[in-house]
Amino acid sequence: MAAGMPTRILLSQGDVAGAIRWAEASGVSSSDIDLSYPREREYLTLARVRIARGRADPAGPSLPAALHLLARLLENAEAQGRMGHALERLILQALALHIKGERERRLPRSNAPSRSRNHKATRAFLLMKGCPCKPYCDRLRRVA
Image 1 (tube, rainbow, N blue to C red):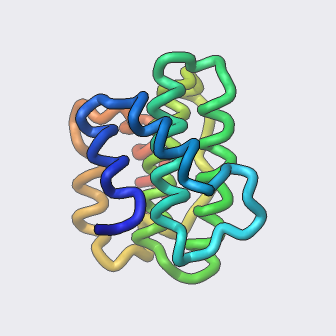
Image 2: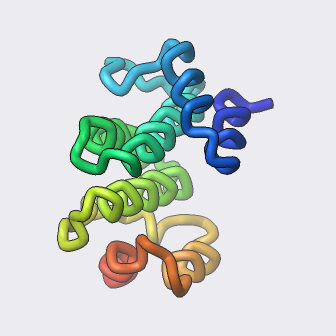
């Protein structure tokens, strides 16, 4: 099973406490210098745990830590031409900003929406009604 996948299942079941336990024992940190590709799933899971934790305390340190980590992961994905991965990071950033209440803040400019191999499916997701990320995604759509 992929690294971090059991924790993503915990998060989908609402077990934030279990996900936090994984994050504390995982050996990955938002402040790690080398966000190597082999451990990328773990870092993304850590960002998801931080976002889930930030739901309970939007003004606390979890959301800024998640946003910082996601920005670094986005930079790596774009530099390596992994646009589908870059899109995932942008969507998670939009979710974190929504929870934080920063609905007017812009996401970083990215070529990912237009360069993703499966951009039709991506556009469908970004336009989905009821998506809390829709205001951010609408802005992304304009550059796609």
